[in-house]
Image (cartoon, rainbow, N blue to C red; front, side, top):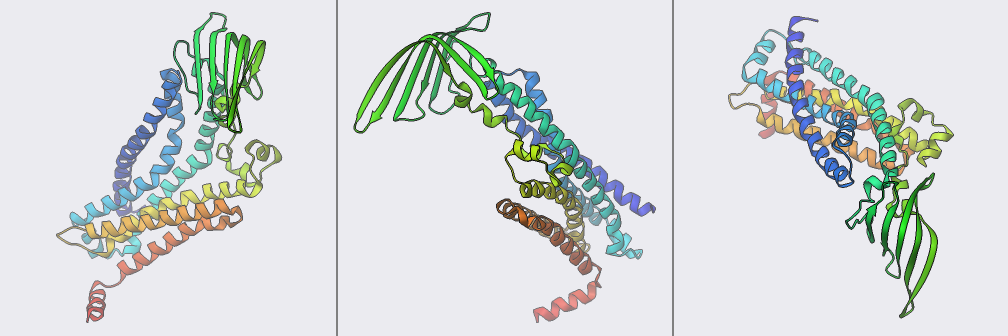
Length: 378
């Protein structure tokens, strides 16, 4: 690689490391704060919180890297312009197409990093996170069955336990289920046991009473039932089964491209939906070189100015927003109809065409551009 290419690439990589570190830290801390609060409220330890936040890090990095690549190229090109290095390179005969080569190499490098994340680390981290969530969801005693305080595990549900014996028995249990205003139930029992089943945890209430208040027309009827043993599906009440379900994003890309019956049954998804998820992952790394080239090519149009290139920076940000808007629109459209998955590659094609147009405009003689601009104004 020529020395000038190594110089530009080194500048971009240095700035990329700085912006990636800052953006990942801000984004990760923002996500970790809410996760920290939820897990601690569920009675989890700091070690579990640290594990969960670490498992979310690959996803955060994959989202932030293209933005960091754009920021690095835009800031780096702006600095090269302000220090007249860019003007010296162009005066030496280097065209915008030639100057874009190390930037393209830089963008491809970032794209490869994103590809490793979205095809490898992110699915592995999500699968592990799903397993840990399933394990924690089964540990109802640690999450919700805390003695001495009223708990609200679901909307309309109130739970109170006086104490927990050393052998795991729940003493003096109170459950109010008012999710349906027309059919409210209160369960009380002297003791209760937690039994884990495939469908989720179940409470076995011992020596207690159930009071049911049911609306019948304009009247309400109260019925009282005393029992020696009653089975209560606390898993349905806490909605733990919804949290233990698998997601398409937990699986590898190759398996999603050719989904088997076990995958479709575990995720309750169709084969076109699985393939759409795979193509979305394939298209995601393509945006990294696009973001880098937009940040570079847009700043070349204005040339050198003592007032800087902040106007070009604004247009570069606007171009990146437009590409991201196309990405979101394509994702929304394919979610409605997975058969339209080729639309996922449209933002990369549109971004590539934008970069080529900007480089072509920057490569045109500056004097001719001014004459054309003057003629258009006339």
